[in-house]
Image 1 (spheres, helix red, strand yellow):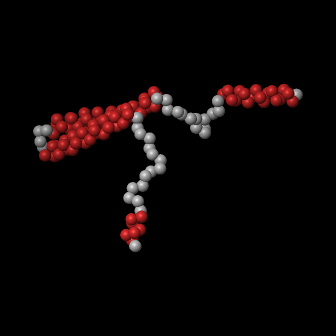
Image 2 (image 1 turned 45 degrees about the horizontal axis):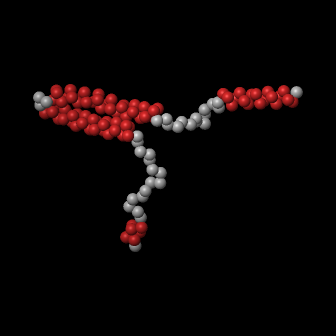
Image 3 (image 1 turned 90 degrees about the horizontal axis):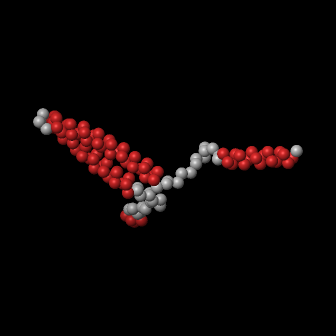
Length: 122
């Protein structure tokens, strides 16, 4: 019986709400950042082990790891910058939040309607 209960469950369940795909420039920036970060981590591990063993490679690899850390930080920031630039250029629709003030034109029309109704009543 337990075997029958297991076979009824699905191994893979599709998500009803699909996530939208990242824009191409943002995706390429993200891939670039992951590759640079992985190289930086490899350099950091090599620098650590060469320092522990007292190898002559310790100093050059450590300098390379520090430079690579700066480059990796910039590449991660590049993802955010590229995303913001893409949003500005391709016109993301923005809707006002519930706390946004009503437009000034609507306020003027309401005040004019109020003054008109007061003048008609008098």
